[in-house]
Length: 167
Image 1 (cartoon, rainbow, N blue to C red):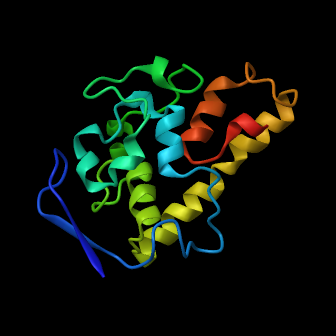
Image 2: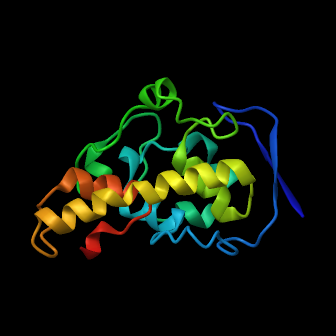
């Protein structure tokens, strides 16, 4: 078993254990269409997500990533729009798990690497599945592959590992 120690702006001396091989042994209800590395290369979260915590993850995840350390830049998003709520909104709504203070994407990166936290994994997978309603809205309201239709929803879908370029 491999232990990961995290020391960044959001966490100090936080450790977790990798229980599965990277990208393996996902819950049967969790079938993301994009890996964290693909998401970072496509352009998500205005490029500023976890730039100070990159040491926690394999360096190859960040090769070709669209990053903007310290400053949100919507032009770096695949659809060049702002499609996220702030961390403060997530905190106020109680969507943040204490071990993943940056939110869903941090949980997904750690899950993808092999960390498992049974109750939190179930909660996040349930949230991920519920986000599919946005996929259905794009299908319902847009012509197939019209990437100018509902671009904020399409960008938000990318943030949740749904590949909205395919609808």
